Amino acid sequence: MNDEKVRGRVQAPEERITNFKEVELGYNDEEALKEANRCLQCPNPRCVKGCPVNIAIPEFIKGIKEGDLKRAYEVITRSSSLPAVCGRVCPQEKQCEAMCVKGIKGDAISIGSLERYVADQAILNNYASTTNVHKNGKRVAVVGSGPAGLTCAGDLAKNGYDVTIYEVLHKAGGVLTYGIPEFRLPKSIVQKEVDSLKKLGVEIKTDVPVGNAITIPELQDEYDAVFVGSGAGLPKFMGIPGEDANGVFSANEILTRINLMGAYQDSSKTPIKRVKKAYIIGGGNVAMDAVRSLKRLGIETHLMYRRSEEELPARKMEVGHAKEEGIIFDLLTNPVRILTNENNDVVGMEVVNMILGEPGEDGRRSVTQDDNSLHTVDCDMVVMALGTSPNHEALKESNMVLTERGLIKTEEEKTKTSLDNVYAGGDAVTGAATVILAMEAGKKAAKEIMESLS
Image 1 (tube, rainbow, N blue to C red):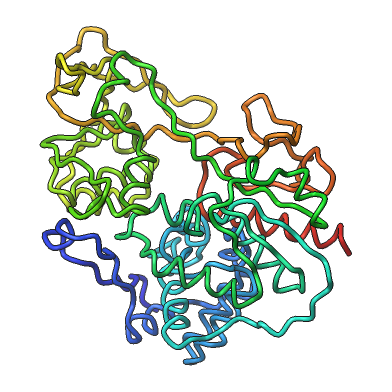
Image 2 (image 1 turned 180 degrees about the vertical axis):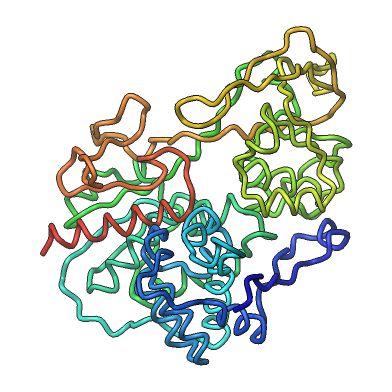
């Protein structure tokens, strides 16, 4: 058995920094079969335990080995409503692949790449999930069309429920549409996943701001149950002097304008100004998405993070891609003031060096400021990528109970909220997290709703 995984093809760095086309090109038939043949088909597969939505991983990989891709797709979609999305953006290296037996002495099976391959082949060959389901007469409203909402809707629809999704934006997909760049997750792929839900009978109403156009109490009156997957789209800032300057943005705004409004195109009604130098503050996947997006606009881009590379929370693959693309990493550094000119335009930052300490209870090393290291850097744009918190506009007039952190409070180990027949999951409950964890919450909520309504 080969212990080295098959490396997928990628766009060359010098090419991809000039476009927004997908960086990872995915497996071809030969590569997928070669990688699938590395799977040991463990009788007690640890990888399944590492998957938040419990995909029968050896079973779908067996389908690839046997050349039965339709069967492989059916296995995946029993557990996941968004396989083409998860195959691209799910952090498999920390989940299913981290549990793979092959990874003990060599490379783990590239489960994510194989999932993507199967999903892409399903789209190419127009495989369809089961649509011939018996309707049970029960109606469920879903607030938000992000990964939690789409997953909940998909599982309910497959079991005969009439589901209507309410989305505030003009396109469905939530963070999949407005937050993740085209070069990591093509919007055509998101649309295909959304279309597959529509084929199951899910109705999606866009441009409907729940909390204003319609309230949760009104949804309670109209539907048998309600699921709230409104996400966490409210950006956080540092609270340092100068943050109100022209040229300071949240990563959310940059990514939304690029992904949803086409701001990377010169013909856009809201183009992003092509400045000379931009600093993105943060070290997570959103920071990496923002810095790599701005690089593609011809801007000299720096990622400033207060810890070292070892502590970067972003996926290692994305960090590697960023380095290949010429992103400059300013590590162990943190801004304390944004400098402006007489027109309140950004002209630079005052920054300090940081010193790492010992790991805390959460395992992360503490960090302190070196007060003698104050210095200045020049720039014309600063982008804050420091995480997000929920915007509870959708909860207006509902009196839903929140936690001390301002998150939706649910029953212990459940998705049930303080309101009758109202459930919630995803970032609105946990705070900003991964796509797959939001999907896990949507799947859990669908199960609880079905148990309650049956």
